Amino acid sequence: MLAVSFHPQSLLHPMQVLRVVPFLLLPFLLPMGALCAYAAEPMDIYLWEQNVPNALGTEEKDKPKITVWFPDADKSVGTAVVVCPGGGYGFLAMEHEGKQIAEWFNSFGVTAAVLDYRHRNKGYGHPNPMLDVQRAIRIVRANAEEWKIDPAKIGVLGFSAGGHLASTAAVHFKDHENPADEIDKVSSRPDCAILCYPVILFDAAQTHRGSMRNLIGENPPLELIEFYSTEKHVTDKTPPTFQFTTDEDTGVPAENSIEFYLALRKHKIPSELHIFQKGAHGLGLAKETAGTEHWPELCRIWLKNNGFVP
Image 1 (tube, rainbow, N blue to C red):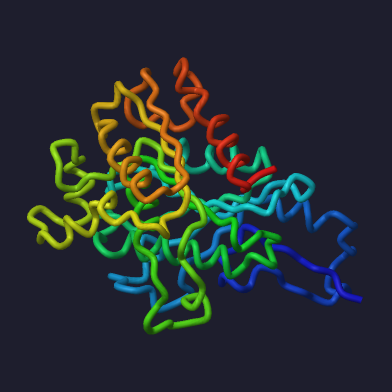
Image 2 (image 1 turned 180 degrees about the horizontal axis):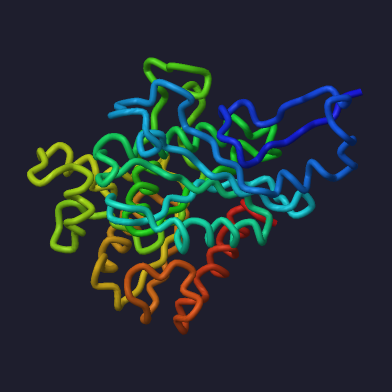
């Protein structure tokens, strides 16, 4: 007889989530349902166990990871979302644009993987944040069967610069030419995108210069500006997209979301854009902002309308 011991707080290889041990090594057998209880705890996973692309060292800042938040087993709907906190590509707002978002997703049965990606204050710019989000999507999809997730229902969400990173994942995806491992062989295309007051424009008056500078440098080549102007790369293969922003956001003006929406509309991609009147930049769930506080429920309804949640 075997018992399963689950270690959600350990930093595990993406494909090694469960450890099976002989029951005699345990003081007691896990009761039925105990595994489900453990599975609801957040679990950290390094994106690469070793040989991190472009790593500058081996410190924690050089090891991007996801923290996976599982819903209760009886609530799970088989959908997962990779969450990209904002921070101008210079830090990460892990609490109100990470942990709180994961808890919100869990409340209606969605698994959330909060991405701790590389950025300028860790010593990293292009292309590393993009490599990290692509790898995160691949890891979630590679674990779909084990985590009871539909591999065709894996989305990406981001706030501010994290919204730019999520939009980058939504438009720049392709198969690895030289896969380093089995996870590299998995698709990095998200099945939906949720962009919250996102940075989009890299060549306009409404560009958030700090995010642009942190990602591609002070005087970037034109080809990088073009590459990261994500509204220019929407195609017929871009996934369905939900966006929200506010009229009062002067940090990342609404034109960023509008231009991305128009590009989606041009390619007939199912999309929805909400521009609320109230709220400065960086609202997160916007719980105390009248009107704008409804965006999470509108997003849940959009997910339902597009078949991602029941």
